[in-house]
Length: 290
Image (cartoon, rainbow, N blue to C red; front, top):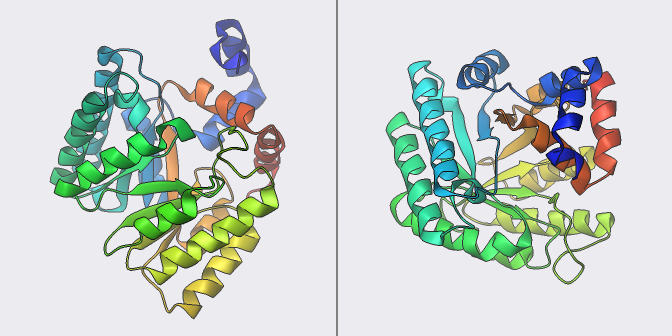
């Protein structure tokens, strides 16, 4: 985490050949044009994340909103909006400053997405923001019922949240969760997190919503397919990170989570810091594309 804020380390990492390979593999670039180019080349449905979180002032939050508005316009102009949506972190649009500011800014992005013929999903962050994020989701869905939610199966509360959000038309992305959380709120045993993922996916598949299963775990992918057949559910999708198991992405027809923006360095460092096992995961992914 210290490295993510150190400019000297950033320059060293950014300049290293291996680092450039990592960045190009897992981040779509720094600009809107870079992101649109990646979307065009992938040929798969995507959800785009403009990198940056924890806005410290209204001007920073506004820059994030403008980046999303520019992205949505560019996707529409390129004829790519139909298979693209955007993922928004509320902390990047003012959540820590003022809940009403985050709602207002998220509403602006949703209105633009609607005009472009696409959708928005609210990313979930650490557990201290879960209630606030779900409250904003509830307010947004009054106008845009298609706004997606993200639920993290390492949180003790998530099975109940799945039951609340499994109603008609509700779009829910299910993830394991990547933030370092205390045992009071989060399951610590990875196997138990997986078991809770299965419990939650059963609730979502049995419901009337639209589940979006974000995982690279081969065993969970197999279970999702088996349970979907059991529930006779075809209205769902897989989601995977840009650059991770691309052959499997194509096989599944998965929606690809595509991060882009100038804050790529902090994004990569934080992902590695949240779970040290990610270091091995990213390095292994560089030599294995299956």
